[in-house]
Amino acid sequence: MHSTPGRPVIPGWRLIISDAGRFWAFRNHLFPRAAVRAGAESAVDADTFDEVQAVIAEQEERARVALVEEVTS
Image (cartoon, rainbow, N blue to C red; front, side, top):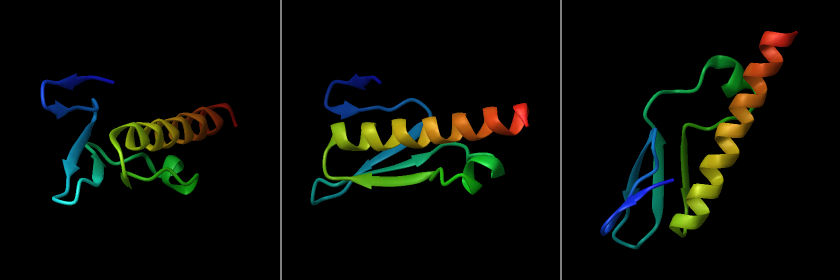
């Protein structure tokens, strides 16, 4: 995941930092239905940039697994 000077970036996600310093991230494109049924969330939040990166990675992995299972079943 990348960051530009003074502004963190997570490709494929829009990142908002609240006045209180909390990180909110919204996926640029909603997950497919199979991923949503598997629990993938297109909007997440966390206290730190590292934490929001980890939550996003979990959501992307959950979606990836769901889509692979849908294709192979």
